[in-house]
Image (tube, rainbow, N blue to C red; front, top):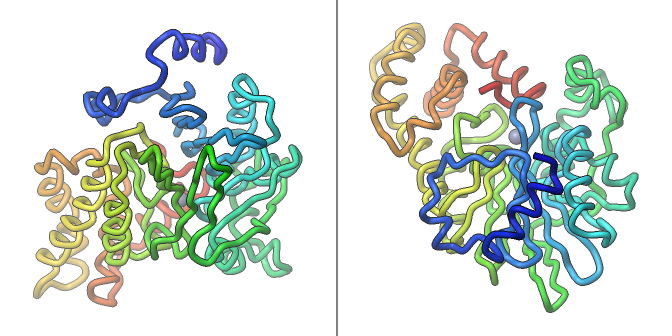
Length: 338
Ligand SMILES: [Zn+2]
């Protein structure tokens, strides 16, 4: 189905997805590649993880469009075309929810359209740390990613230039979007987009809906606290960074995954040497998947997640670093291959 046809089929349905309808929707009701109208002028778009794309959202204000997440360059082009089927208003701002390639490397594409990349101050700080090539040092993550991705090779890094330390508000009297930094989570610079009238929350990778948690750049303990603050907003609809749109319980499930992961790693580490903990990873997996609310978060990256949590809890590293290195490479190139 073409984008336009898909769009018409949405218009032919109810005016927009009611919150009740969403509650009835299974958390895995995936609609990759089809704009989903959540409320008047508010759209969610589930990206194709096979292309490494993140999810996007956009809000059509009176005079301009705000896009949530820049995606990879190829994802940005795809999303831009979807927006253009709906609105001809200028796309003025692209909000990077964090510095990772699949959320921020498309910035140049949006800039070419006349938009300005916007982010929490921590995004620029993280880019200074990891994008060493851009800032005059040795090759960094962009250069690594460019080896794998043609769209990255054919574009350039464009760091966000409008930065906010805590909150940035877009409010034209018709729509209000609050960009908020709630603390360390997936990275040290995560921002979320909160729509208080519609009670819609776009989380970036602070919350995902499936086995997409890359934990290498954040802190799972602080992540739990940040998720508590996100839950306190009172969202009725949650647009995660990856995976399908969901009800507010997605925030609870994401939180429970980290609580359980930390509990299981802590319990299995007591009185054990690192190599014994390493050997227990499959036993941990078996225990975690028994919990049906979090089983969908347990995937290929579990070994890397266990290694990171073990370091957070004990200050020690597991002997086999391959899982963590692979997760980092996978995250940089594809953000999870599931
Ligand atoms: Zn990420």
